[in-house]
Amino acid sequence: MLYRYRASNKEGKIIEGEGDFENESKALEFLKSHELNPINLELIVTKTKLKSGLFGSGINVDDQILLTRYLSLMLKVGTDIFKAIDILIADFEKPAVRSFLIEVRENLAKGQPFYKTFEQYPKIFSPVFTNLIRAGEASGNLESVFSELSVSLEKQKDLQQKIKSALIYPIILVVASIAIIILLVTYAIPKMGTLFQGGDMEMPALTKIIFNISGFLSDYGIYLLIFVVALVVGLIVFYKTSLVGKAFFQRLTFKIPVVKGVLSKMSYQRFAVTFGSLMKAGLPILENLEITATTVGNEEMRQALIRIAEEGIMKGMTLGDAMRKEEVFPQTIRTLIAVGEKAGHTEEVLVTLSDFYDSEIDASVKSLVAVFEPIMLLFIGLIVGGIAIAVILPVYQMTSQIGGI
Image (cartoon, rainbow, N blue to C red; front, side):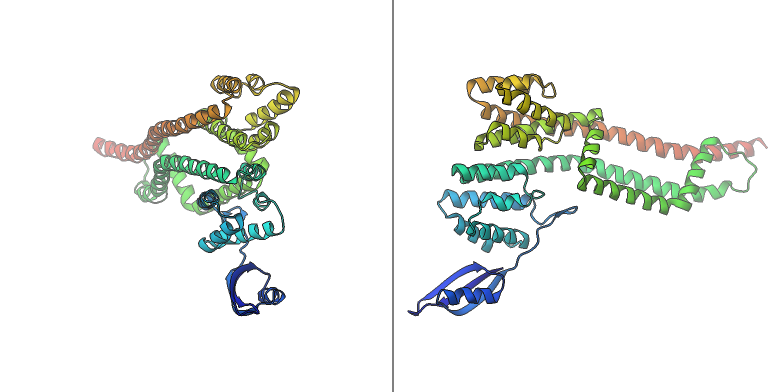
Protein backbone atom coordinates (compact mmCIF):
# COMPACT_ATOMS: atom_id res chain seq x y z
CA MET A 1 0.00 0.00 0.00
CA LEU A 2 1.20 3.48 -0.81
CA TYR A 3 1.30 6.01 2.04
CA ARG A 4 2.04 9.72 1.98
CA TYR A 5 3.69 10.98 5.15
CA ARG A 6 4.52 14.33 6.74
CA ALA A 7 7.01 14.28 9.61
CA SER A 8 9.59 16.39 11.43
CA ASN A 9 13.22 15.57 12.18
CA LYS A 10 15.29 16.40 15.28
CA GLU A 11 15.92 19.94 14.04
CA GLY A 12 12.18 20.50 13.53
CA LYS A 13 12.45 20.48 9.75
CA ILE A 14 9.33 19.22 7.97
CA ILE A 15 9.92 16.16 5.76
CA GLU A 16 7.32 14.99 3.23
CA GLY A 17 7.36 11.85 1.14
CA GLU A 18 5.67 8.66 -0.03
CA GLY A 19 6.44 5.01 0.56
CA ASP A 20 5.17 1.47 -0.01
CA PHE A 21 4.36 -0.32 3.25
CA GLU A 22 2.35 -3.41 4.19
CA ASN A 23 0.25 -1.44 6.69
CA GLU A 24 0.18 1.69 8.83
CA SER A 25 2.33 0.10 11.56
CA LYS A 26 5.12 -0.62 9.08
CA ALA A 27 4.96 2.98 7.86
CA LEU A 28 5.29 4.29 11.43
CA GLU A 29 8.20 1.89 12.08
CA PHE A 30 9.93 3.28 9.00
CA LEU A 31 9.55 6.87 10.26
CA LYS A 32 10.79 5.88 13.72
CA SER A 33 13.85 4.10 12.27
CA HIS A 34 14.76 7.32 10.46
CA GLU A 35 14.25 9.39 13.65
CA LEU A 36 11.24 11.19 12.21
CA ASN A 37 8.21 12.27 14.26
CA PRO A 38 5.00 11.62 12.30
CA ILE A 39 2.69 14.60 11.83
CA ASN A 40 0.36 13.13 9.24
CA LEU A 41 0.11 9.70 7.58
CA GLU A 42 -2.30 9.19 4.70
CA LEU A 43 -3.14 6.06 2.72
CA ILE A 44 -3.05 6.99 -0.98
CA VAL A 45 -3.92 3.72 -2.69
CA THR A 46 -4.21 0.02 -1.91
CA LYS A 47 -3.14 -2.72 -4.25
CA THR A 48 -5.75 -4.05 -6.63
CA LYS A 49 -5.40 -7.52 -8.12
CA LEU A 50 -4.84 -7.27 -11.84
CA LYS A 51 -7.38 -9.25 -13.81
CA SER A 52 -6.19 -11.25 -16.77
CA GLY A 53 -8.81 -13.90 -17.34
CA LEU A 54 -11.79 -14.62 -19.54
CA PHE A 55 -13.32 -11.16 -19.30
CA GLY A 56 -10.21 -9.13 -19.98
CA SER A 57 -7.80 -7.24 -17.76
CA GLY A 58 -7.94 -4.23 -15.53
CA ILE A 59 -5.30 -2.65 -17.77
CA ASN A 60 -6.49 -2.23 -21.35
CA VAL A 61 -4.84 -0.94 -24.54
CA ASP A 62 -5.80 2.68 -23.76
CA ASP A 63 -4.06 2.42 -20.38
CA GLN A 64 -0.96 0.95 -22.01
CA ILE A 65 -0.88 3.77 -24.58
CA LEU A 66 -1.07 6.43 -21.86
CA LEU A 67 1.48 4.63 -19.69
CA THR A 68 4.06 4.29 -22.47
CA ARG A 69 3.46 7.81 -23.78
CA TYR A 70 3.88 9.44 -20.35
CA LEU A 71 6.95 7.37 -19.48
CA SER A 72 8.53 8.27 -22.82
CA LEU A 73 7.82 11.97 -22.27
CA MET A 74 9.15 12.05 -18.71
CA LEU A 75 12.30 10.09 -19.55
CA LYS A 76 12.87 12.37 -22.55
CA VAL A 77 12.97 15.47 -20.31
CA GLY A 78 15.39 13.73 -17.93
CA THR A 79 13.06 12.62 -15.14
CA ASP A 80 14.45 9.86 -12.93
CA ILE A 81 12.57 6.55 -13.43
CA PHE A 82 11.53 6.39 -9.74
CA LYS A 83 10.24 9.96 -9.87
CA ALA A 84 8.43 9.25 -13.15
CA ILE A 85 6.64 6.26 -11.63
CA ASP A 86 5.73 8.25 -8.50
CA ILE A 87 4.18 10.96 -10.70
CA LEU A 88 2.18 8.34 -12.63
CA ILE A 89 0.99 6.69 -9.40
CA ALA A 90 -0.33 10.06 -8.25
CA ASP A 91 -1.89 10.95 -11.63
CA PHE A 92 -3.53 7.67 -12.70
CA GLU A 93 -7.03 7.32 -11.29
CA LYS A 94 -7.60 3.71 -12.37
CA PRO A 95 -6.90 1.41 -9.37
CA ALA A 96 -5.49 -1.45 -11.47
CA VAL A 97 -2.92 0.82 -13.15
CA ARG A 98 -1.88 2.46 -9.88
CA SER A 99 -1.55 -0.94 -8.22
CA PHE A 100 0.64 -2.16 -11.06
CA LEU A 101 2.85 0.95 -10.90
CA ILE A 102 3.27 0.49 -7.15
CA GLU A 103 4.43 -3.06 -7.83
CA VAL A 104 6.87 -1.79 -10.47
CA ARG A 105 8.28 0.72 -7.98
CA GLU A 106 8.61 -1.89 -5.22
CA ASN A 107 10.44 -4.29 -7.52
CA LEU A 108 12.77 -1.55 -8.75
CA ALA A 109 13.55 -0.65 -5.14
CA LYS A 110 14.47 -4.32 -4.57
CA GLY A 111 16.93 -4.12 -7.45
CA GLN A 112 14.88 -6.04 -10.01
CA PRO A 113 15.11 -5.06 -13.70
CA PHE A 114 12.33 -2.77 -14.92
CA TYR A 115 10.88 -5.30 -17.37
CA LYS A 116 10.47 -8.04 -14.72
CA THR A 117 7.16 -6.72 -13.37
CA PHE A 118 5.68 -6.51 -16.88
CA GLU A 119 6.85 -10.09 -17.48
CA GLN A 120 4.73 -11.31 -14.55
CA TYR A 121 1.52 -10.40 -16.43
CA PRO A 122 1.84 -12.13 -19.85
CA LYS A 123 -1.93 -11.97 -20.47
CA ILE A 124 -1.84 -8.18 -20.19
CA PHE A 125 1.58 -7.29 -21.61
CA SER A 126 2.62 -9.22 -24.70
CA PRO A 127 6.06 -10.89 -25.04
CA VAL A 128 6.91 -8.18 -27.58
CA PHE A 129 6.04 -5.43 -25.08
CA THR A 130 8.13 -7.03 -22.33
CA ASN A 131 11.12 -7.85 -24.52
CA LEU A 132 11.22 -4.36 -26.02
CA ILE A 133 11.44 -2.93 -22.50
CA ARG A 134 14.13 -5.49 -21.64
CA ALA A 135 16.15 -4.52 -24.72
CA GLY A 136 15.66 -0.81 -24.08
CA GLU A 137 16.74 -1.18 -20.46
CA ALA A 138 19.87 -3.12 -21.46
CA SER A 139 20.84 -0.52 -24.08
CA GLY A 140 19.91 2.49 -21.93
CA ASN A 141 17.34 3.53 -24.53
CA LEU A 142 14.06 3.17 -22.62
CA GLU A 143 12.75 6.56 -23.74
CA SER A 144 12.73 5.65 -27.45
CA VAL A 145 11.37 2.16 -26.69
CA PHE A 146 8.40 3.61 -24.80
CA SER A 147 7.86 6.13 -27.60
CA GLU A 148 7.83 3.35 -30.19
CA LEU A 149 5.54 1.20 -28.03
CA SER A 150 2.98 4.01 -27.70
CA VAL A 151 2.97 4.55 -31.49
CA SER A 152 2.70 0.80 -32.15
CA LEU A 153 -0.16 0.39 -29.66
CA GLU A 154 -2.03 3.34 -31.17
CA LYS A 155 -1.71 1.82 -34.65
CA GLN A 156 -2.96 -1.50 -33.29
CA LYS A 157 -5.92 0.22 -31.65
CA ASP A 158 -6.75 2.20 -34.83
CA LEU A 159 -6.68 -0.99 -36.90
CA GLN A 160 -9.01 -2.75 -34.46
CA GLN A 161 -11.36 0.26 -34.50
CA LYS A 162 -11.46 0.24 -38.32
CA ILE A 163 -12.35 -3.46 -38.36
CA LYS A 164 -15.02 -3.01 -35.67
CA SER A 165 -16.51 0.00 -37.48
CA ALA A 166 -16.66 -1.93 -40.75
CA LEU A 167 -18.42 -4.85 -39.05
CA ILE A 168 -21.06 -2.83 -37.16
CA TYR A 169 -23.58 -2.68 -40.04
CA PRO A 170 -23.32 -6.40 -40.96
CA ILE A 171 -23.75 -7.37 -37.30
CA ILE A 172 -26.83 -5.14 -36.98
CA LEU A 173 -28.15 -6.68 -40.21
CA VAL A 174 -27.67 -10.23 -38.90
CA VAL A 175 -29.28 -9.47 -35.52
CA ALA A 176 -32.24 -7.69 -37.16
CA SER A 177 -32.69 -10.58 -39.61
CA ILE A 178 -32.73 -13.17 -36.84
CA ALA A 179 -35.22 -11.07 -34.86
CA ILE A 180 -37.56 -10.73 -37.87
CA ILE A 181 -37.41 -14.46 -38.66
CA ILE A 182 -38.06 -15.40 -35.01
CA LEU A 183 -41.03 -13.00 -34.89
CA LEU A 184 -42.51 -14.42 -38.09
CA VAL A 185 -41.96 -18.08 -37.20
CA THR A 186 -43.05 -17.96 -33.54
CA TYR A 187 -45.86 -15.38 -33.67
CA ALA A 188 -47.14 -14.41 -37.12
CA ILE A 189 -47.21 -17.87 -38.74
CA PRO A 190 -48.98 -19.65 -35.83
CA LYS A 191 -51.69 -16.96 -35.98
CA MET A 192 -52.10 -17.52 -39.71
CA GLY A 193 -52.03 -21.28 -39.22
CA THR A 194 -55.30 -21.16 -37.29
CA LEU A 195 -57.03 -19.97 -40.48
CA PHE A 196 -56.33 -23.29 -42.18
CA GLN A 197 -56.92 -25.63 -39.26
CA GLY A 198 -59.93 -27.91 -39.37
CA GLY A 199 -60.39 -27.55 -43.13
CA ASP A 200 -60.38 -30.40 -45.64
CA MET A 201 -58.02 -28.57 -47.98
CA GLU A 202 -54.65 -30.22 -48.60
CA MET A 203 -51.95 -27.64 -47.83
CA PRO A 204 -48.93 -27.25 -50.14
CA ALA A 205 -45.69 -29.00 -49.06
CA LEU A 206 -43.86 -25.69 -48.48
CA THR A 207 -46.66 -24.47 -46.21
CA LYS A 208 -46.56 -27.71 -44.19
CA ILE A 209 -42.80 -27.42 -43.71
CA ILE A 210 -43.01 -23.78 -42.57
CA PHE A 211 -45.92 -24.49 -40.21
CA ASN A 212 -44.14 -27.54 -38.74
CA ILE A 213 -40.96 -25.51 -38.14
CA SER A 214 -43.07 -22.76 -36.57
CA GLY A 215 -44.84 -25.26 -34.30
CA PHE A 216 -41.54 -26.80 -33.22
CA LEU A 217 -40.01 -23.40 -32.38
CA SER A 218 -43.15 -22.32 -30.52
CA ASP A 219 -42.98 -25.44 -28.34
CA TYR A 220 -39.22 -25.86 -27.93
CA GLY A 221 -37.79 -22.46 -28.92
CA ILE A 222 -36.79 -21.50 -25.37
CA TYR A 223 -34.82 -24.74 -24.93
CA LEU A 224 -33.17 -24.26 -28.30
CA LEU A 225 -32.20 -20.70 -27.32
CA ILE A 226 -30.68 -21.90 -24.03
CA PHE A 227 -28.72 -24.57 -25.92
CA VAL A 228 -27.41 -22.05 -28.49
CA VAL A 229 -26.38 -19.54 -25.78
CA ALA A 230 -24.64 -22.30 -23.78
CA LEU A 231 -22.88 -23.51 -26.92
CA VAL A 232 -21.67 -20.00 -27.81
CA VAL A 233 -20.44 -19.34 -24.25
CA GLY A 234 -18.73 -22.74 -24.20
CA LEU A 235 -16.96 -22.04 -27.50
CA ILE A 236 -15.83 -18.61 -26.25
CA VAL A 237 -14.43 -20.17 -23.06
CA PHE A 238 -12.76 -22.92 -25.14
CA TYR A 239 -11.14 -20.28 -27.36
CA LYS A 240 -10.13 -17.89 -24.58
CA THR A 241 -8.71 -20.41 -22.11
CA SER A 242 -7.23 -23.15 -24.29
CA LEU A 243 -4.33 -23.23 -26.74
CA VAL A 244 -6.06 -26.15 -28.47
CA GLY A 245 -9.17 -23.98 -28.84
CA LYS A 246 -7.22 -21.12 -30.37
CA ALA A 247 -5.49 -23.49 -32.81
CA PHE A 248 -8.80 -25.14 -33.76
CA PHE A 249 -10.58 -21.85 -34.53
CA GLN A 250 -7.52 -20.55 -36.34
CA ARG A 251 -7.46 -23.57 -38.66
CA LEU A 252 -11.21 -23.25 -39.17
CA THR A 253 -11.15 -19.56 -40.11
CA PHE A 254 -8.17 -20.01 -42.44
CA LYS A 255 -10.23 -22.54 -44.43
CA ILE A 256 -12.76 -19.84 -45.37
CA PRO A 257 -11.34 -18.42 -48.66
CA VAL A 258 -12.56 -14.81 -48.32
CA VAL A 259 -11.66 -14.56 -44.63
CA LYS A 260 -8.28 -16.25 -45.16
CA GLY A 261 -7.08 -13.33 -47.30
CA VAL A 262 -7.81 -10.78 -44.55
CA LEU A 263 -6.30 -12.94 -41.79
CA SER A 264 -3.16 -13.60 -43.84
CA LYS A 265 -2.61 -9.87 -44.35
CA MET A 266 -3.07 -9.32 -40.61
CA SER A 267 -0.39 -11.96 -39.97
CA TYR A 268 2.01 -10.27 -42.43
CA GLN A 269 1.38 -6.91 -40.74
CA ARG A 270 2.02 -8.36 -37.26
CA PHE A 271 5.22 -9.99 -38.52
CA ALA A 272 6.52 -6.71 -39.97
CA VAL A 273 5.62 -4.65 -36.87
CA THR A 274 6.95 -7.15 -34.31
CA PHE A 275 10.11 -8.18 -36.14
CA GLY A 276 10.92 -4.56 -37.01
CA SER A 277 10.35 -3.27 -33.47
CA LEU A 278 12.48 -5.98 -31.86
CA MET A 279 15.22 -5.50 -34.47
CA LYS A 280 15.27 -1.75 -33.81
CA ALA A 281 15.50 -2.44 -30.06
CA GLY A 282 18.62 -4.51 -30.69
CA LEU A 283 17.41 -8.03 -29.85
CA PRO A 284 19.51 -10.87 -31.33
CA ILE A 285 17.91 -12.18 -34.52
CA LEU A 286 17.29 -15.72 -33.20
CA GLU A 287 15.47 -14.42 -30.13
CA ASN A 288 13.65 -11.92 -32.35
CA LEU A 289 12.37 -14.69 -34.64
CA GLU A 290 11.32 -16.83 -31.67
CA ILE A 291 9.26 -14.00 -30.14
CA THR A 292 7.81 -12.90 -33.49
CA ALA A 293 6.67 -16.48 -34.17
CA THR A 294 4.43 -16.36 -31.08
CA THR A 295 2.64 -13.19 -32.22
CA VAL A 296 1.74 -13.73 -35.89
CA GLY A 297 -1.50 -15.63 -35.19
CA ASN A 298 -0.89 -18.07 -38.06
CA GLU A 299 0.35 -21.60 -37.31
CA GLU A 300 1.86 -22.10 -40.76
CA MET A 301 3.77 -18.83 -40.50
CA ARG A 302 4.84 -19.61 -36.93
CA GLN A 303 6.42 -22.87 -38.05
CA ALA A 304 8.07 -21.10 -41.00
CA LEU A 305 9.69 -18.53 -38.68
CA ILE A 306 10.99 -21.31 -36.43
CA ARG A 307 12.48 -23.06 -39.49
CA ILE A 308 14.07 -19.78 -40.63
CA ALA A 309 15.75 -19.54 -37.22
CA GLU A 310 16.74 -23.18 -36.72
CA GLU A 311 17.44 -24.36 -40.27
CA GLY A 312 18.59 -21.05 -41.71
CA ILE A 313 20.12 -18.47 -39.37
CA MET A 314 21.66 -21.04 -36.99
CA LYS A 315 23.40 -22.66 -39.98
CA GLY A 316 24.91 -19.39 -41.15
CA MET A 317 22.36 -18.32 -43.77
CA THR A 318 21.29 -14.71 -44.17
CA LEU A 319 17.73 -13.75 -43.27
CA GLY A 320 16.85 -13.09 -46.92
CA ASP A 321 18.19 -16.47 -48.09
CA ALA A 322 16.42 -18.32 -45.26
CA MET A 323 13.11 -16.60 -46.04
CA ARG A 324 13.27 -17.36 -49.78
CA LYS A 325 12.47 -21.02 -49.01
CA GLU A 326 9.29 -20.19 -47.06
CA GLU A 327 6.43 -19.73 -49.51
CA VAL A 328 3.97 -18.90 -46.71
CA PHE A 329 5.37 -15.37 -47.13
CA PRO A 330 4.43 -13.58 -50.38
CA GLN A 331 7.19 -13.07 -52.94
CA THR A 332 7.03 -9.32 -52.26
CA ILE A 333 7.95 -9.71 -48.59
CA ARG A 334 10.75 -12.20 -49.29
CA THR A 335 12.27 -10.08 -52.05
CA LEU A 336 12.07 -6.76 -50.19
CA ILE A 337 13.63 -8.20 -47.03
CA ALA A 338 16.45 -9.81 -49.04
CA VAL A 339 17.15 -6.55 -50.89
CA GLY A 340 16.83 -4.47 -47.71
CA GLU A 341 19.19 -6.77 -45.82
CA LYS A 342 21.89 -6.45 -48.50
CA ALA A 343 21.53 -2.65 -48.47
CA GLY A 344 21.48 -2.49 -44.66
CA HIS A 345 17.92 -1.12 -44.57
CA THR A 346 15.92 -4.06 -43.18
CA GLU A 347 14.24 -1.92 -40.50
CA GLU A 348 13.02 0.62 -43.09
CA VAL A 349 11.70 -2.20 -45.30
CA LEU A 350 9.75 -3.67 -42.38
CA VAL A 351 8.22 -0.27 -41.56
CA THR A 352 7.17 0.09 -45.23
CA LEU A 353 5.64 -3.41 -45.21
CA SER A 354 3.78 -2.66 -41.98
CA ASP A 355 2.26 0.53 -43.42
CA PHE A 356 1.41 -1.25 -46.68
CA TYR A 357 -0.46 -4.06 -44.95
CA ASP A 358 -2.24 -1.59 -42.66
CA SER A 359 -3.91 -0.06 -45.71
CA GLU A 360 -4.38 -3.49 -47.34
CA ILE A 361 -6.23 -4.83 -44.28
CA ASP A 362 -8.50 -1.77 -44.23
CA ALA A 363 -9.33 -2.22 -47.93
CA SER A 364 -9.82 -6.00 -47.57
CA VAL A 365 -12.21 -5.64 -44.63
CA LYS A 366 -14.28 -3.10 -46.58
CA SER A 367 -14.36 -5.45 -49.59
CA LEU A 368 -15.38 -8.36 -47.36
CA VAL A 369 -18.23 -6.33 -45.89
CA ALA A 370 -19.27 -5.19 -49.39
CA VAL A 371 -19.55 -8.85 -50.45
CA PHE A 372 -21.25 -9.95 -47.23
CA GLU A 373 -24.02 -7.33 -47.24
CA PRO A 374 -25.77 -8.34 -50.52
CA ILE A 375 -25.40 -12.04 -49.63
CA MET A 376 -27.04 -11.39 -46.28
CA LEU A 377 -29.83 -9.34 -47.87
CA LEU A 378 -30.41 -12.11 -50.43
CA PHE A 379 -30.56 -14.69 -47.63
CA ILE A 380 -33.11 -12.60 -45.70
CA GLY A 381 -35.11 -12.09 -48.89
CA LEU A 382 -35.22 -15.84 -49.55
CA ILE A 383 -36.32 -16.63 -45.98
CA VAL A 384 -38.98 -13.91 -45.80
CA GLY A 385 -40.06 -14.62 -49.39
CA GLY A 386 -40.34 -18.34 -48.65
CA ILE A 387 -42.50 -17.65 -45.60
CA ALA A 388 -44.68 -15.24 -47.60
CA ILE A 389 -45.16 -17.79 -50.40
CA ALA A 390 -45.95 -20.52 -47.84
CA VAL A 391 -48.75 -18.33 -46.45
CA ILE A 392 -50.05 -17.03 -49.79
CA LEU A 393 -50.21 -20.44 -51.53
CA PRO A 394 -53.00 -21.94 -49.36
CA VAL A 395 -54.91 -18.64 -49.49
CA TYR A 396 -54.69 -18.67 -53.28
CA GLN A 397 -55.64 -22.35 -53.35
CA MET A 398 -58.64 -21.72 -51.10
CA THR A 399 -59.76 -18.77 -53.23
CA SER A 400 -59.51 -20.88 -56.38
CA GLN A 401 -61.63 -23.63 -54.81
CA ILE A 402 -64.29 -21.16 -53.68
CA GLY A 403 -64.32 -19.58 -57.15
CA GLY A 404 -64.83 -22.99 -58.76
CA ILE A 405 -67.89 -23.86 -56.68
